Figure 1 (cartoon, helix red, strand yellow):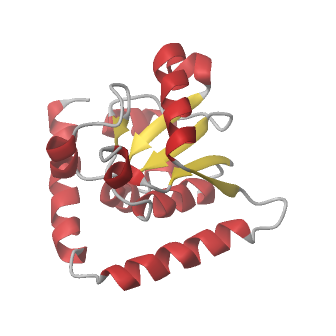
Figure 2 (cartoon, helix red, strand yellow):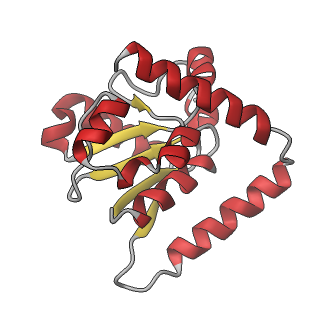
Figure 3 (cartoon, one colour):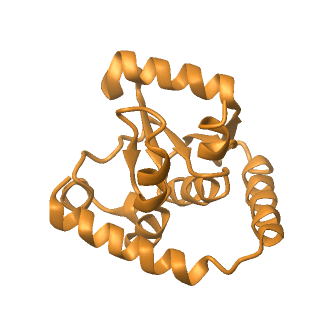
Length: 169
């Protein structure tokens, strides 16, 4: 990813994170339950968000690291902010950081291929790729998956434990 792009995304993520950090944890948990219910009650023509736990995420990451994005048909996205990733590290070496505030502000998944690549520094996921989302606790990743679903993506996975669970095992 180009330095200017990273700087823009990180600055945006930091500003948005500080503005939203006052949210009590109970509100965040309620938000996650509502978002999950909306996905899970979707009609058969709408995407359904698949939730995975630690063991399944471990298998996903093993396959993703061994086969790569193209062969595995997956793209693993960590929607935490850069400071969080610097603190804990990445879930795996090839996990891509794309902070939720950047996804929301730029409506990332609705951009055309060239705009997406210019802004993000990697190729836009194709509709047949599985998008695997992770964050700190599985709340922001649900929001990111919803945005992807609104842009037409249907193969969506959420790691509910997030980095909080991942790095304590």
